[in-house]
Length: 155
Ligand SMILES: Cc1cc2nc3c(=O)[nH]c(=O)nc-3n(C[C@H](O)[C@H](O)[C@H](O)COP(=O)(O)O)c2cc1C
Image 1 (tube, rainbow, N blue to C red):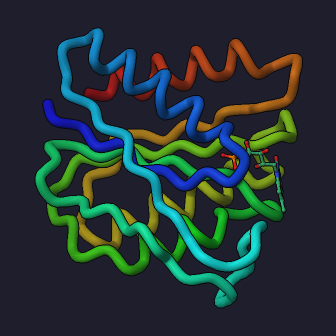
Image 2 (cartoon, helix red, strand yellow; image 1 turned 45 degrees about the vertical axis):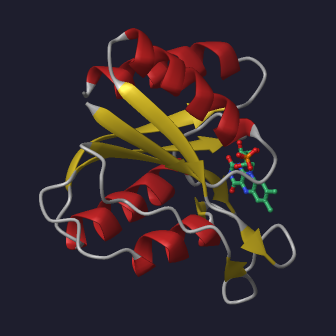
Image 3 (cartoon, helix red, strand yellow; image 1 turned 90 degrees about the vertical axis):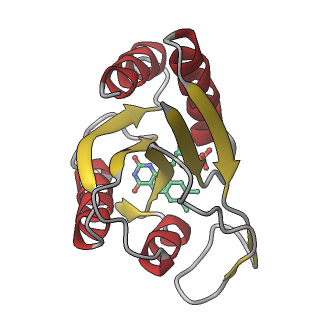
């Protein structure tokens, strides 16, 4: 499959996961391409106070994996506006992941992945799975490996 990994990353963590995922998917025989959403404006981005600069297109891929940081117990506003401006994704296969610092899902992870799932679903995409990846020191390595494994097994 030709898989797009479309991410926003402010400090690089989501980018690290995206590249590990790209490697894993390539090892499994897929073509995987990482594309980064970029903005102009101050970071951390605040709703309504940034402009999307690089806006990756979703067409041309057999499946898309969206990745974003959690921000303020919620989905990062950059990923939220990016997803909201996408055209219809009827029957597109999609998966989503977030990275977050706090080692508990309900401190933003469940909320953020729920939001990604609902925006993509409302656009007609088939959301095959979501993953929450913890960046806290004790959990990071295991969480990254498990998240990458689970995401790659979806395709
Ligand atoms: C302004 C701000 C708010 C954040 N809020 C949360 C939060 O509510 N819950 C959490 O677990 N992590 C939170 N984090 C941590 C980030 O989600 C985490 O470091 C993430 O991996 C960053 O991804 P990135 O390096 O791809 O930007 C926050 C970070 C920033 C800068």
